[in-house]
Amino acid sequence: MEEYIFHKRSDTRKLCLAKVRKVNDLLVATGVWNVPLINRLFSEEEAEAIMAMPLSRRNVVDRLVWKLSRDGKFSKKFWKVDIPNKAKIHMWRVCLDILPYVGNLATRRVILDSQVCYNPQIEHGDVLSWLNRCAQSLSLTQFGELLFLLWGVWKERNDRVWNQKRREAGDVCLGLISRLQEFRFHNSKPSRSRSASLRAVRWVAPPAGFLKINVDGAFHHQTRAGGLGFVIRNEWGTLLAGGACPLQGLISPEHAEVLACQHALEFARNYGFAPAILETDAMEVQRQLMACSSTNTFALGRIYEDVGVLLDFQPGMQVCYVGRSGNMVAHQLATRACGLGEAQFYFTAPDQFLIAAVIADLCIV
Image 1 (cartoon, helix red, strand yellow):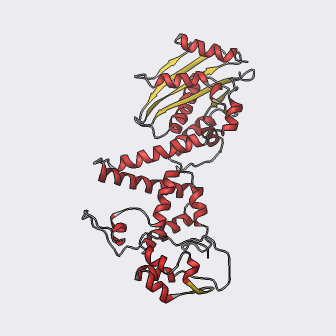
Image 2: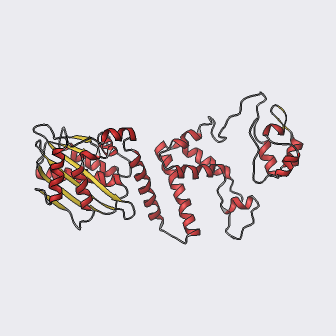
Image 3: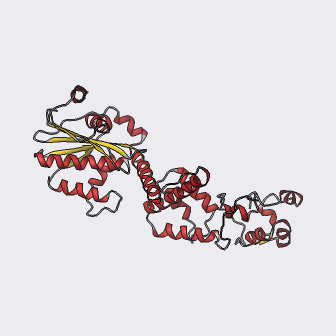
């Protein structure tokens, strides 16, 4: 074993005097601990933990294992979850039992002023066992959401202890869901290499006999407010109608994007704009709407289902993805909507800025 010994609670002076630098120095033979030496160098708790490690009688290459998973693959699922890295690192620190909470510091004989109570009967292994069971029973998406919520609870706890901040539990959960969905939404955007190829994308008129409905949503994380915009044009690029609506109570950018689809389709149905192609610059929204699933248990699942019903009223309706540069009119309407007091609908371009945007789409070559 080539692994170097390093532990904050170990008496490094004792280790140096005993010329113990590696785990291998604590063995009397392959797979056999040097019990007297270990008991002399380490505390009773540490010695028990060391000698509880199962060793092979063969001279094998070292490897990392996860003791609570029979196949040793817990960390594979752990690191594959789609959550911010800071949340992954926090949960990995939980797994390694190195978070500086009161109970942990107390077991490491750190003198504390705090009188916060903790239960020494609760073992760290119980937490790891629970996480391992969760990893086995939950899907990758659900497991990631659990880890992110646990990180958020820890962050809220620190805000309360150190910054005297306090939020209602419901607001904490809603804020975490919003942040995670925003993270996943932006991570679903095309890669940098693909983004470079999409810079030259422009709006393309629909085939003869069809209309094109472009939609977009805007979202502000701090206020959970935003707006949506949509524009309907024919095969010559003529603006037939459009709309801009302010939004409140959003949980993510995706929420604004799918609401834009819903409002645009409702408007098109009410005013008879058909047949049409729906175009969005939100790749995940386009993917969800084309998934053809009868049920959607995602947080926005009900809205997706409502949009699906609207799509069913227009057989043959296509939902397409286009880069931002091919969706600029709807984007400008969504941005404009954020400052409106109420929804506005247009059957001609309302302002010079929108006329210019429509003309710019037709002039790009």
